[in-house]
Length: 219
Image 1 (cartoon, rainbow, N blue to C red):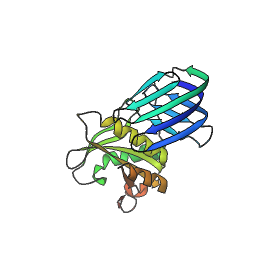
Image 2 (spheres, rainbow, N blue to C red; image 1 turned 180 degrees about the vertical axis):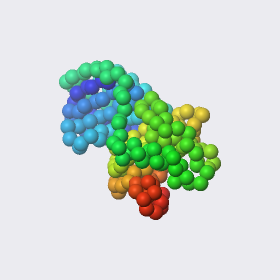
Image 3 (cartoon, one colour; image 1 turned 120 degrees about the horizontal axis):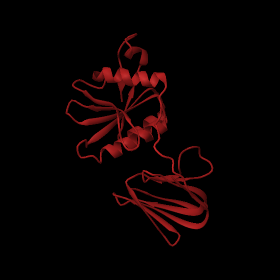
Image 4 (cartoon, rainbow, N blue to C red; image 1 turned 180 degrees about the horizontal axis):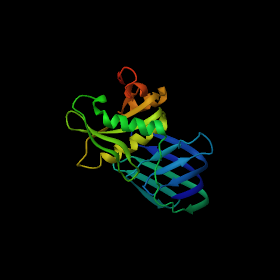
């Protein structure tokens, strides 16, 4: 991972345009090829970013980050305050709590929860950026990636978005769509998921365990 502290401005052009004026920021270049721009505020979310696969070109104090869709993130460096590279190695991945792990197990056992004729391909389907909780096939034989959380928040939607983008680059799997499954999905997460073409499934944990009605809601 490369971490650069720099006074810079940022211009994005693609589906829309955006501009960040000159200011000190953290530029993060990850081993998977993604480039993220952070400020010292705004919590964990970057101000702007480019997901892999993308290409970074550096010349004359300007970084140009482009993806296969032709979108460009152009970073103009006025002054570099620090430039450090760390080798983090392979991450073991997120270890889910007991409820999330059990939800994954139950949903894998009861794939009909998602619809009639659905089948399980694999739990913890491996990818270069971490395992997908469930990879399924729907009744039409098309692949579906499922991310499972106890509480559905924006970071979970971002995670599923990255998985779906990556899986869709595999011609043996594409087209792949995504379902965000959780006991409770926050309105902001639901809005973002819908905006990105992802489905949301609100899961009644007790019902899935057979303690109550097995009614689930698919939005």
